[in-house]
Image 1 (tube, rainbow, N blue to C red):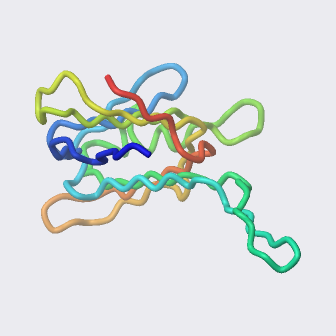
Image 2: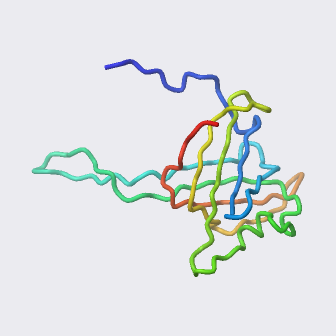
Image 3: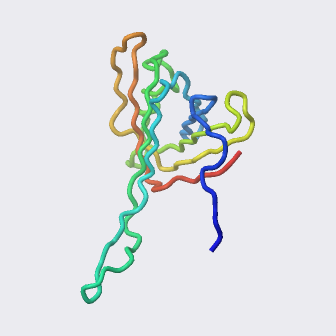
Length: 159
């Protein structure tokens, strides 16, 4: 069995030049003014299907896909009135009667601000749930955004 080092590279941080984009099928919208430390990405994964055979525990099976959750907070910057702002995106409807879905791409550069290479994760089937909430902040008004994705783990790649 080979010894493998994991997580051995230099640390990276979204706050050091990361980007979050939301694609609505027509445009790719880059989200600015994300509050430091507010980005949370929770890949849902799959429910383990635990079972027994003749009283002995067996290796769990891969069960149903769980939704992934992406949360972030932004400083309000005309979000109520922008034609492609957070509220406008969240208000879009689909003509087929299903919830409007988006593709979300999160990029984190390896070399910090200005880095041209890094890691990214792409989530498809994203939708706003609950609807974004605008709250007064100490310095700026804040918009709390939660998006859920039918993609249980996202697609990690490098760029």
